[in-house]
Amino acid sequence: MLDHALGQGPVRANVRVQPLRLCWIETGQRGLFIGGFAQSTVGLGPSDSRDLLRVFQT
Image (cartoon, rainbow, N blue to C red; front, side):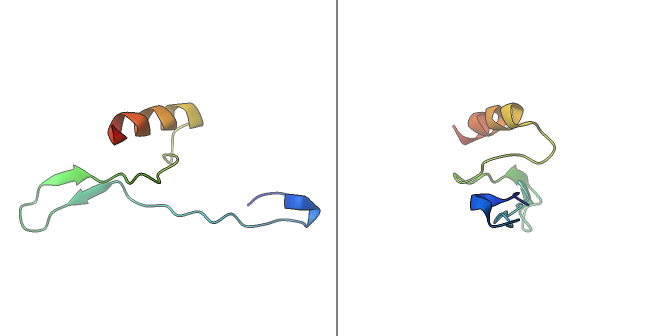
């Protein structure tokens, strides 16, 4: 929750949490799916999260 955006009291941020890991049913093969809109990784600090996403998205 964001505090006091534009002086109008608390505002809820539009946040979506998506899993990064997936598994193909046909083969059982595992992989990562990280879209271009990913901004952070749950459990990591902002700097570490950006670095990890940069590595996986290139």
